[in-house]
Structures are given as C-alpha cells and as structure tokens.
Length: 229
Image (cartoon, rainbow, N blue to C red):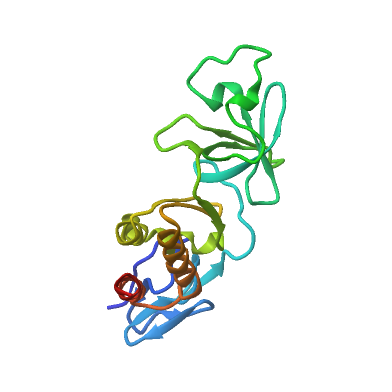
C-alpha cells in the first residue's frame, strides 16, 4: 500500500521519509531506500502525480514574517535602527518595537542599541517591496552580549536545531554554552573559549554532513570524544 507521508509544499529535511511503497517514484532531490522514498537535501516537497520531488531552498536567506533572526545594527537614526538581516534586504526596527520601555523623542538611541551590536529579533512584517520590520518584544528576544557569532547556510538551520530543538540542546548540554540559532543563518555562542570552539566545530560538522542519516548519533559521539580529550 503506497502512501505519501509529507504534505505538498511542506519543507523536508535530509534523511526524512517522504513516501512509502513502490507505486510512488523518486524525483529530483530524493532517493529510494527499499520501500521508502527519502529526502537527500533540504527542500520543498512537491507531489507531481505519482512522483515526489524536492525543490532546493539553496542560496541566501529569504526573510519571512514570524522568523526569529540574529541581526547586526548597521545604522542608528532619530526614529529607530537599521539592521543587517544576513540577506539581500536590511530591516528597520522602530522605537516602539525596540523595547517595552518608553523612549523619549530625541533620546540618544545608541544607549539602547549601538552600531555593531547584535540582537535577536522577530520579523513582524515583510512588504512586497521587501521592506522588513522587526520587533524585540517577545520571549528570548534581546541584545546579545559577549560571545561570538558565526554564519552557517540558512538552509541547514533546521538540521542544526533538530527536531523540537534536540540537536542544539545536545550541543548546549555537552559544551555548557549558551547558543541561539537565527533562522537567517547566524548562530551566537557564549561559553568559555574552548567550549565555544567545540560548539562551533559541532555546528560546522552538522552543516557539512546534514544530508547524512544517523547524524544525531555521529554528533553525540563526536562531542563525547572531544570532551574526553
């Protein structure tokens, strides 16, 4: 009995089973493993008759409403801040979206967020002209202090986070680092210097090997070995 497991136009991650049965054919970005059709890259699942294929989501980050991203402050104006979103488009954060505090008109905004500061924010609006508005109001949204920020392929972010945050939690527990993963491919890590380096190594390993199955076990083994040394 053949069955398509993923819904049309949903995002599939490498190693995910998309369909079972011999009546369904593997298209681009998928392969057959016995009775199953499996994703070999991150992509958008498309069901085309009896064929299932994946459209790649490769390339730069494309901002979407609701995404939590890590941004760098690149300009401070009298009415708000302009942020680098690690995409082709910058974002604006107004005074009312920046903090729950009341900011007086004419206040020096650099005392809240200055040039070069990194912040965790949420995209609240993307217009058809790709004008992006972000907010810092919400749980976990904050200015990042200390630590280091690295860049990864935005398409590998779901793999780095893992199902229900399992992968990133494993790295946090093993390295005792604070880690925040932005959906725009920026990752912030804070711990002691050696632990930060180990966390970066683990994240880069996930990025490189994201298409492999059994990745969680491989990363677990890598972390355990590295900590023993």
